[in-house]
Image (cartoon, rainbow over all chains, first blue to last red; front, side):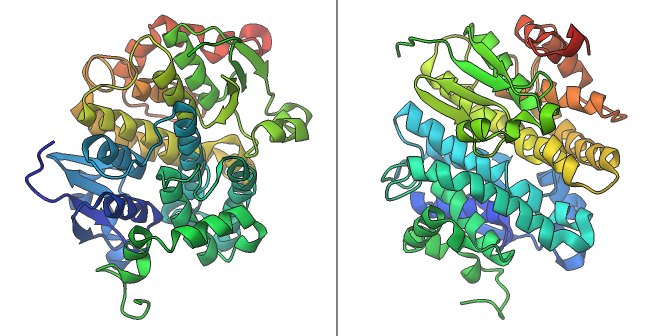
Length: 216
Length: 212
């Protein structure tokens, strides 16, 4: 599919969902423009009318690509998979594909939504415990699944959408002080993936909107 | 792909995620066995060691099919899409396909998880308001998206995975007494389709008294 203009990613350096899309773009070698949406400043720039028109859910990321606007990181990733060449992000085998989707959804529906910013703001003072609980619970479920499916990466020996979801969630786990050492398969996979350029380049510590005091 | 045995859905009559899979099987004309997992009785049968062995996240549904066990309803639905014939649930056009994914994920990640049973049980108080807030917020965001994408169904004029996600979420909204349910026209249209009627929570094997 011919693309005339670069995609635009509206995201936040530390948003795990935005990071997933950055990883996918990097793996596919797709250049894109960043438009930062600061989730904290000015009461949260995702709550402006302008951003709401782009993404009515008022969350990040939103991606403008090929004349359409997409939200929901996995929808974006699967669109890129279907329209861009480059390494596969979903295996050819239907059973392995299903495992990739299952792991991705376990993270993207089963863990992350319970510890995203909007929910934590509603929880209030106990947000750290709340976030820890859901990440802990999610990783306790994920560890035995990955023990079955993983080889070098989450499913077999090729990087997939499951790896794209895992790494940002481990980053979140560390931010919530969940001890990832409890989950040896998750830990090993994360360490392996963090050596891959696409994961390093897209890391929250080195984005255009990363604050100077945490930039590396 | 040769299928020797019927798939098994481990689910709950009223679980919206289980309902999605039932709708999908019905749309594809796939016969299956149901093993009920009562989310309330005995402290919740999803918490047994036996069920945990099947689905470590201890939620429904879990589906045994073609020698593997899958959880996460959208992973199941897309596996069925790729391995069975029948009505397409994902458009061939990549942009429309992306819209179906977006709407489905909107519901399956953006609304349902934050008002599911486990989360509500964890809240100290105000469960009803919590559920209302998240469903209302999600539906308010979904309405303008559907205005753009919908024809007869969520995305143009063919039933898709997006419709499969919408109807059970509207059911949840109505159960929680959520006052304004947008997308009424779509929901009403889709509920007339046999696959949605047959798989409705009111008429499952484990529906109490076969009532609401």
